Structure formats: C-alpha cells, structure tokens
Amino acid sequence: MKIGYVQTSPIFGEITQNFDQIESLVGNSKADFIVLPELFATGYTFISKEEAASMAENTEGKTSEFLMRIAKRTGAVVVGGFIEKDGNHIFNSSMIVSDSEVLGTYRKLHLYYKENKWFSPGNKPLEIYKVKDTRVGIMICFDWFFPETIRSLTLLGAEIIAHPANLVLPYCQKAMITRCLINRVFAITSNRIGNEARGEDNFTFTGGSQITSFNGEVLSTAPKDKPYIDFVEIEITQARDKNLNKYNNVISDRRIEFYSLE
Amino acid sequence: MKIGYVQTSPIFGEITQNFDQIESLVGNSKADFIVLPELFATGYTFISKEEAASMAENTEGKTSEFLMRIAKRTGAVVVGGFIEKDGNHIFNSSMIVSDSEVLGTYRKLHLYYKENKWFSPGNKPLEIYKVKDTRVGIMICFDWFFPETIRSLTLLGAEIIAHPANLVLPYCQKAMITRCLINRVFAITSNRIGNEARGEDNFTFTGGSQITSFNGEVLSTAPKDKPYIDFVEIEITQARDKNLNKYNNVISDRRIEFYSLE
Image (cartoon, rainbow over all chains, first blue to last red; front, side, top):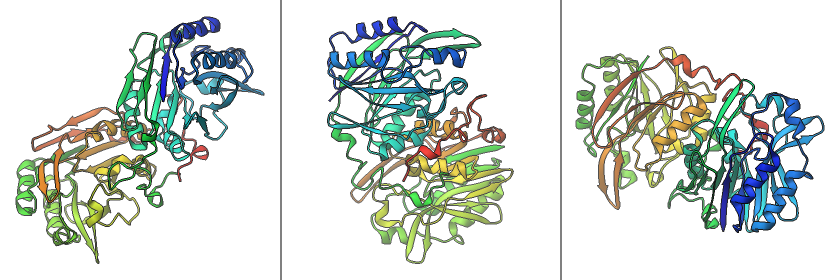
C-alpha cells in the first residue's frame, strides 16, 4: 500500500492558488492514500469568527470538489482540512474523500490557542473509515497532544492515523514516534510551512511532515521550510499484529481496571 | 525541592554488595526525594519463579531497612524496587520509605517479557504519596509504555512520577519528554546499567537515567554505561499549573465523552 502526504505553503485566503500549489506538487503521482494539511485551502490565522465563517463550506463545495479531483488524478483516497459549516457553527474539520464521494468529516476535538474563539469544538464521535483494505482514523494537529485520541482510534480499529496539521510547537514529530510504537499503528502527519502574521498573532509553521511506522520508525521526513511531497510503501498487516514480543501485547496488556482516566 | 536518582550496576544476587554500591554513590548527599532502580538489590534476570521467590521480602526486611538507612542519611524520602512477597505471590514492586517508616508499596501493573513467568501482575490501585509538600506517584519500567499509567497518576494528583527502571529498549527516555509535557508533571526515571546473561536471556541495561521537567525539558541525563548519581532543584508549583497557554489546559481540555478507551 502506497501512502503519502503533501506539505504545502498556503497563502492566507488564496484558495485557488492553494489548490494549484497542491496540484502542481502532486503532478502525476499515483497512490492509495494521501493526507493534506489542516486548513490547507484557507490558511490558519484568522482574526475573527466572521472571517473564518466567510470561508466555511459544507461537503458540497469547492474543497470537496478539489479533493475529489485529486482523488481521481492519483487513484488515492484523500484527507485534507477545511472549515466546516453546520448551521451557526463552524468547525476545524477534515474531509475524507474518494474519487466519487465524501466518505465523512472529522471535527477537531481539541482546539489549540485562539481557535476556540472562532471554531466550535468537535461534536461528533471518532470514526473509522475503510480505505481499500485498511482502516483509517483521522485526528487534526493539536489532537496529538492528548494520547486518548490515537488510543481511542486504535481501539476503534484504526491501522493508519491521518493527521492533517498546522504545527507551530516543536514536540509533535518526536511524540508521534512514541504514539505509533505504543499503539502499533502507522501515522501520516501532513504539516504546512510558512509564516502568517495577522492581527496579534505571528505563527511560523514548522513543516517536517512525517510518516511514522507501527514500530516507531520514521519512514519519511519533509524539510522544515519547503513544500514537499513524499510517498512510502507500507505493509498494513504489520499494524494488525499488536504483539510487541512473544510475551507482550500492546493492547491486551492494558490494565483497564486499575486506570483512573475520568 | 531537591530531587535525584542513583543509577547503579547491580550484581545479580549480591544484595549486600548492591547496597554498598548505593551507599558509596550517595556519600553525604542531602536531598528531598531520591529514586533507585527497579530490583536494585537483587538484579533482574531470573531463571525461575523459585529463584525470584528466594529473594522476595515484605516491608520488614533487608531492603526496607536499607532504604530507611538511606532516607536517614540523606534526609530524603526514597523509592526503590524490590521483590515483594504476599502469600504465594511475588510482585515486581517498589517501596516508598521515609527515615522511620514504609509509606507504601506499588506493584508493577504491566509486566515485561518473561516477568510474568515469575511475578504476579500488580493487583493494587495506583496510589499517591505525600512527600514533604508534594504528591508523588510510582510506576515501574515498562509501565511507561502505557500512557494510561502516568495519565492516571496525574489525574489522581501526582506532581512527580517516581520511575524505577531496568530498561533494555531504547524508547523510554524520549517518550518521557512527551509524557511529562502532556501531563505537566516531573518524572525521575532511575535506570540501571550493566549486562546480565542468565538462562536463555542476555540483557544489556541502557542507563541514561533521566529527570524530565513538567514542560518536557530534560533536567538531568546519566551516562549509558556508568554508575551515576545526580540531583536537581525543581519548583514543584510548576507541576500544579496545568495551563499550557492562555487558552489551553492539558487536563480540562480533554474530551472524555468522545474517547473510547475500554
């Protein structure tokens, strides 16, 4: 199975240009599964809810059309971030899309920094999507900080974690090594690069998109400061075997009755 | 508050020599809290339950006396590993000891590799101990692999994680950076060094004992291959503030109702 990411440098508010950048990076690549960054079409650093809402869409809009186009072109199922509108609420969401349909959306559960000034926190259960012969779970950026997210997705059956991101802190990539190792899942962290100085905020996004293996090995690392695309071949059955060695199983060894997680 | 660890090179079965090694490393050091490795008195690589049981103790034995002596000498509360006997069961445990009493024992919840051939898995709840003005939780070695352990201890009120270890895999030290950062707790991983070739097993213990700060900073690192002792001054109130920034709290931001952790 061939999985990959596109690391982009979105220009704030320039949706068409941001789509074009991705199409040109993708070129004639073929793959099974591709992850794009969080909010890849719009940019990240909003200054008001009104501004963010003005770029919100549902699953029948510019972004879903674009993602289907990429899916058709590459043969892959594609995940990417967008601003999701639902009544008066907008969410920091990701869409999972095949060449012919939107398979679902995930609404970011753990909002970072000022995001909660414009976005509503995710209000839908974590879900698992069938992609070819594998099962995929989605989390967005800061969701990584809470180990409960990947653990829950793993327990729900995810073998690959799609992780669109707009990372500004330096911790995530190393943390994903631990997260993947202890859950024995693959993860694709698709980050952006570039700088956005808007309102009181000045964010530099840290790139370094990463594909992490079920055993904690880093299979691909993108540069910190350049648009980049990469793919790796993985053997998905490796994420189905939860035995760490002859005596330990990373899931069944859990001692649930002794945990205090409320 | 001054906290520290002693990284030792135990000789299998040579309890008196192993005590002496620690006393000589400790010298006239003074501290508030000290962590010794897992099974520091006995060594690790048993070949039968009978062998391990022959070195088992309760909380009124050689090891508790030794730990109280170290507590008296240093002024510290001391945590260290031992084989705990309870009826027909033996546990891979740690004892927490002041200069005058055993405050409690913790029985390792997640047994590694062949340990479950001789040890019974921990059968007591996670507990928090008052040490001077702070609260301490204990986990042993492979317990780190399960994020539920530190998370539970944090939610129960731990500000410092005492982590006696006999690590043979290379992942723990980096993982502790993530674990401490996301829980905003301090941790003292007290590892051993040396090699034990016994029966079919041949373990090289990886040293690199580490004190990790609430913000993921590494405050002390021991060499990989030498006995070592170190102390650092910490400001424990830093572990009480669970705010990551003005908008995020690492505990209250959890979305428990959306997790699937069973």
